[in-house]
Length: 466
Image 1 (cartoon, rainbow, N blue to C red):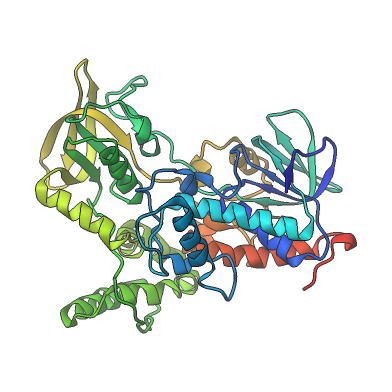
Image 2 (tube, rainbow, N blue to C red; image 1 turned 90 degrees about the vertical axis):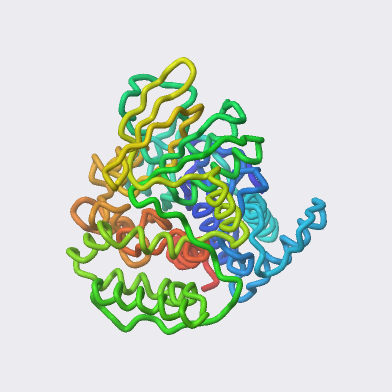
């Protein structure tokens, strides 16, 4: 059940952001309470649980994780798989769906929204959905006052900052002094106006680039697509086999990287999937990251992050196979380097790529898509709320400027290092502390722990059954 918030009401919990992280936090709070808490989610989108990742309606945009890892019910790994199988039948989906399926991302958004609605119905709760944007957050004796674009007041005793991924600022592209309709963010690829045979350039070679490429191809684009990034590294594929590997024993970054590289090479030589070794160490990555000295964390960001990302953030095998076919045919070309010059002309955009080998490549483009990913240094974010909170000292940047600083549960720390008792965050904003904090399963576990702290802070009328 959802409704519009009442002006002047003080909510037990306000969640800023109704994407996956915010929605699953609200879900876990409802699961832990005996009586319906007063709960408000501030989210400009019409639907809760979708966010950037799951708002896409394109069937070619798939989850990067198998269905069995996406369940929202602890102890029931097949919960989402069963839901997806029913949805596939109801919607006439042609592909078989099982635990190992990589289903469309839009399905998961619907699943999250449905679970919230069912839990609210069970409890007789009303989730107030405020379609607005929070501009600032100010503490008072009763909790927090949320300053919105709409002047109507919104106050809460406890607040969860679930802002999710922050878009990286559109760079001042060299040679481009004003907006050009042929230059878009990658997630806007579906509205790109480009001739079917024109060349396109995507700046970035990660998961968002793959989404953009799939969108262009689904809309009938046949021209060569170029993609450029510093290392020119593409995400790799998941293994079709299942198994386990031993985690690393090393505690220093240098030794760990050497051990991981050698182990993966030995796995490949023996016919054993190297992905098992990466997955085994992913589950220990948070503890490993926490134990590294700052100097080694900086070294990881400079030299090792790309190696980890392309091996860790993988895609379904059939998607990677499609990329490989395009690479072999020459319809997809990957460049290691950077965009040096961009000159808009009447007929095309002229781009010069400065390659890492010292050479240059000249391209004449009908479209350029920015796929540089998301901003992890919130001090550079364009979010008015994050900038206001950082300026006021309500929050402070995380270690190495990554995300925001929190305690072990997710309570945000102010400029002086003290943790607020009633201001929390989760997900990617905790990357400085946890590093591995972006997957749906990891965020759900954080949300469950955070919900326990929130419920303990509720008035007695909504006491927890902990």
